[in-house]
Image 1 (spheres, rainbow over the protein chains, first blue to last red):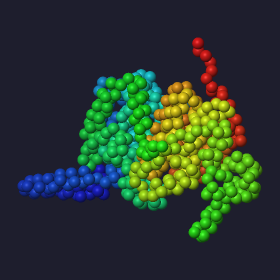
Image 2 (image 1 turned 180 degrees about the vertical axis):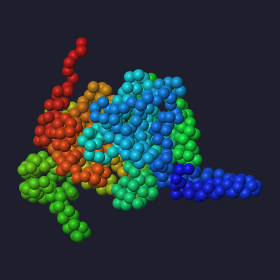
Image 3 (image 1 turned 90 degrees about the vertical axis):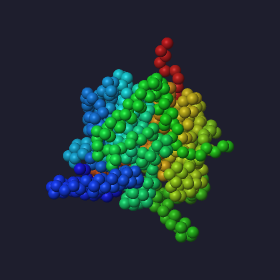
Length: 320
Length: 290
């Protein structure tokens, strides 16, 4: 059982209690089914109450959960014949982004995604899912390859942001991100992006200029982390919880603002509680999106992406 | 009030140049100025005549958008676009619109970018000039929209597009909407580029964050002014991340040029001439494929 989060503490405690009772009933050979049933009903009610009334900050905790499924987990569950392809052909292979070719419901597809680690060792190798420029350049290389062979592209977004480091600046972090936004705009194949964890700023957007954008229910997408926003706006990083609300970073917020196309509902308590069930839900979403996009011509796909981003912005236009 | 104005004078002295903010779009009204780089004291008139560049050490002072127009475009040719767009407050941040109002009054701009059309040595161009005196030149919906509309006009009229960037990055108060302006401007630039049209990006001090990670880096030619600070992440953030002292010239235009990230650095004095030449060299009439 994975570590519980503050807000779900009551659920976890009750669940433990039920397990305890079951154990006692078994050992003592007494019938406690009535008690257990009552508690299980109570658990269901509690789960519904807690998991349907999650605050933005609760969702941030779920999005950051160490055991939350990563790009690699979804690749294993959703696609077959996956072959990972490495390198940007210029500098190196950035393991904070993975990509490759695979089969989806019988059709060839290109998959690209940020890749976090689940252990410290893996996180160091993958730089905590925070890419360098060569990661974005690898992603673009694979997108262009997909375009040549007319394969749809699926991007999984899951990063705190592009890595803020010396080498990243020297090799052109800004240019690498900018180039992806620019080139993704012109891709002649369907592009679908799904935020599966944290969608942190430009480093996330660099895989996000898509025809269809979805977010898992407990994922976030923001211009800056709640901690960063709190320290800039109120000079106090401990106000992250308030910032998470004020900055409007949840899937529901982005759906309301018309920025994303849909929300992929998560299993109760978060995707980490049942990877297979979650992957199935995600697979349905990708399948529907692809079906819709296959109807569009190359020009229509490009125009569709243009119109999608062109309309984002809130301002007042005064009549002269 | 008296104390406040005394304080503000002190603050200005620390910065090295005394600027009269009450007089819109003007050079310093006071007589003397001290260069923050080389500490030389000279007449502000001298600075003005030298395009706000220190006559001794070449330090490039920040310019307002209107000052740039006056040194870049042929006199009287500039026609401003979309002055009727106003910032709204999508996330309902307290006092956000008041701050916008103050900066708007101070700069004479509706937002942190001035866009329009004019000519450089007789050639029509569409320009966008960011002004860091307006909310640090940060990009919210109106900045994104004005730049996108300017690019679309350039595409429609088949004209070159020239941008002078000066920005701290995305506008926090507009949250993820400001992030999406990076994508909006970039898709518009892609369409402009697909029409075979020229885009020149000139990065001025400072160009960082979301602006540097979108249109600022997408020029057919990426140019910078000397010593301009250009980068993705802030210096302090990087120092905290890598736990090492960064070189003094880190993220300067010269540092970027040395690392292959820029086409060239143009001194402000030669900016107009060089841009005119570049635009002329991209006029229709390259190799004919008939």
